[in-house]
Length: 284
Image 1: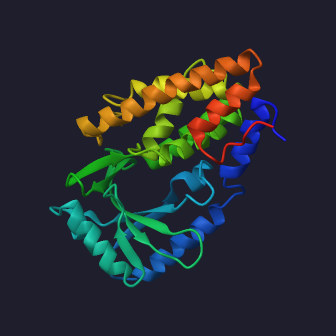
Image 2 (image 1 turned 135 degrees about the horizontal axis):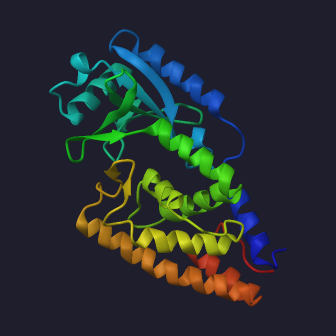
């Protein structure tokens, strides 16, 4: 029986959370990909990335991303992202599915969870030989985009350590909300929004969710992080549609938080359920 908002959030989190540490499985999948490719591509390095190693994955909605660092001169120089993705798909052979909707990876299908999104990349080094960043494809715009996946993972780990366990819980709740929208934002964008939230009481789940919407609303036209605009993938019409979704839900989230603050748990739970859908419990 659900009578209070905190318990309702606990039940919702239990319903959407992917429990456990799946990093060993991630490495097993990564090694399988490398064996499958064999000598058809010159792979300089490979590593898993994404929500599974960052512990922000959702139950039944988490695939694994594997970065393949390819030899720049042999596979990437003067090539369009679409051509490189086609090369990777051919190297993976049977079982390789379509290119992901974001135009950044080829999905490798497995009989058991998880499927793997294979992301080709080139590495860019500093003068001292250390890695500055990686460039990954964006086939939708036929551009190469800069990414620093290991640095982002470290930022998420540090934030969880500094802000407490509820930081990742709120991120996962927002990912579940985001995946059900008509127009969604990229997972990385969603996580950066959470990183940008300063002076938030993360132990107050409802307030932290409301503050995520507040921060998100201003992040769709411009969100500077680690030397780039995180929102650059959004076209103006798409950003406007997302902004409208967020503005509407932000107001609901504030009302739900306020109702809980005056101990109107029945109404607060009803509103949170209207935001998060049927996996959020009902009152009583």
